[in-house]
Length: 377
Image (cartoon, rainbow, N blue to C red; front, side):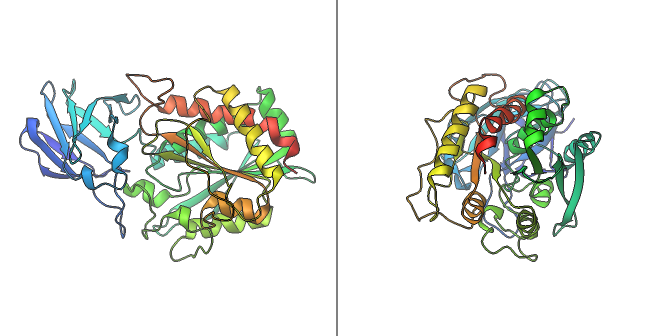
């Protein structure tokens, strides 16, 4: 049986340069449409059962975040449910995946994908709860629905909490995080969820970038726009996703906002705040410190030692979600980053940082929010 590489499916991305010899399979990652960003890959290998395979991504050295390949291992699956790590090395030019498949079909990916079908299942499952309601904010450039869940009821005195994920579609760990966050918030037996919903209403956008997700992009939407640089002046033509969500935020107001992402290079879970905004207040600083402490206690996979350098006062890029929201609404706004690699503080050699651990971290987000919810106004 001849070996074959394919990627013509939801979030698929790869081009086969030469796939005749299993010991020298040469591949290239495609760039995001209308953009130079590339790093996300997701493809299927068939016909190689029991054969030693070297899958060489020959343009990896030119990828958007070259440092992300160092100490990185790709993920693989046979059943499309359980994703495990496989031997991977990088020589500064080529990323090489070394694997002997045990079955006739195996999938490889940058991180465990989160398909648009699974997104649809997440929304449908959420709506089985009386706590949840759906608003379709509008359509993307590819004609997909932009879904927003409202969890809880809005009434006088309640805090307004926003969580969004996957502005960068290749950061699929962000929507795995959403499964844990939404699932716990809808659990009627959970006392923390119940207490939070007494005090707050939640607006949740599990996937900000459906087009990029389906197309297999790393960082941009169908127009080639990096959504997390569009918040200052979004347009329906270039960044309808941000245009729609930002308009909804202005309708509801915002007391809390968490923007969930993934980081290619750093093997840690961490928070990036809005320290550089012109109007930063002591209250925002104190609230963020309390949230970080509570999240670290709720889930030790989160840490505060490693992360991005803090922006100097007045230097924040207000085209980014966290900075725009914190500056505009005077609220606690943060960006949560998760690793593509593993959690260096608590590594798992077989799975690395995994969907299951993302889900647990998402659930722990409720404990952290509960610690500060009374002080959000």
